[in-house]
Image 1 (cartoon, rainbow, N blue to C red):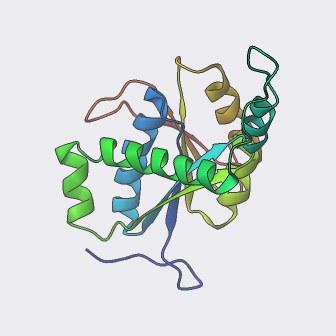
Image 2: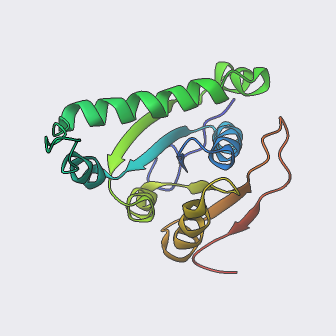
Length: 178
């Protein structure tokens, strides 16, 4: 397979936002297909609410004792492990595993503290495309998809939450045009 490059000689990367939901898993499957078609890489990102972990520590246990404050490094490590587990689970599909095996789809996973839309928009500046889910199993997924459609620096592909080996054709909308 020939690897395509942009005008600066960079290999195009597809960016995919995941949160473990069915729709984000469907989005990841589509992102693997797109990265394979581009002959480039795939960056899988999960955004997490670092502040939420620390606010939770302020809750009192019965008897007035405070919960222990979480270790930032441990929280980050746990989020990294979670996103890697989602990728491994989605890649257990034989069709997707074959696409990755025949290469050259290099998959990078990252956990980034922050609000999902802000993180994905920031990460989209260097991406050829952003793939996100729009599902029924999380109230925030729809707003993330809409926020990315409005603000991303690259074309955005929104995938419905039904995980199949061949998802329905996703809707695509570029920030730069209809």
